[in-house]
Length: 269
Ligand SMILES: Nc1ncnc2c1ncn2[C@@H]1O[C@H](COP(=O)(O)OP(=O)(O)OP(=O)(O)O)[C@@H](O)[C@H]1O
Image 1: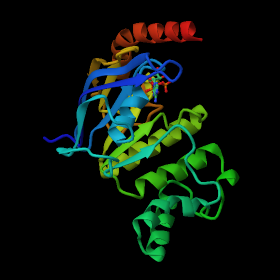
Image 2 (image 1 turned 120 degrees about the vertical axis):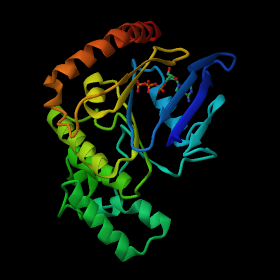
Image 3 (image 1 turned 180 degrees about the vertical axis):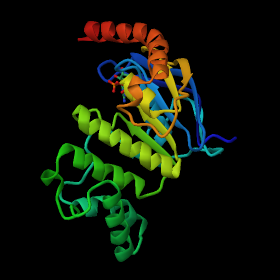
């Protein structure tokens, strides 16, 4: 089957800002294919190159070498078949929740009435019925994430790229959001590339977990199929014996890399 997103032998080398003669290879020779409808998480130590890979998939960053294919076609420029959700707040503070949700549709030139109706539907779908006229500062962190989720999904992207979208939330809100994402994903089965440093979250959500090595020259060092039953409740699935088994297996690969990453950060500080 043609992958929805195919990162083929990607290497990303950055030139140091302080010393132009210094180069840093963040990601090296990394190949990652995500099938249509597949939910793939990438885990790895802090600073290893997870966001770099996601930015390559989004078409926001050109790799130093390697190619990107989207449903079999070479990616040139921004990946228009993808929707993104990043760790940082991406809402426009001067726009209401509804206006934020429909921003992309307006940009696409959809009729204002239609966009508004669809926006209201999406607000209801993410549990924010009646909150459309609130501004971001009038919403809680969890609500703002819901608005951002609706803003991404209303565009009906074939590929969803998420970079630690819920890391700033408290654990309860986070688990609610994770379940909501799984419900929405289950209904539409889009290809998802989910970046996280949280192994529990990765296992609970995904069909497959890819483990990256510590940098420099980060590359995949392990790949695990998550054969847990669906639908899943992210809190409940953690007590499933197979979850515990998978966690042990993946952690045994990830642990050393996390320690290496931590040591590197300490030395760099
Ligand atoms: N534009 C850039 N210029 C120079 N170095 C960069 C650039 N972007 C990323 N890097 C470096 O590449 C490495 C990987 O960064 P990246 O943000 O992809 O890691 P990450 O795994 O997503 O980190 P975290 O888990 O902390 O979010 C880091 O050492 C970072 O400093």
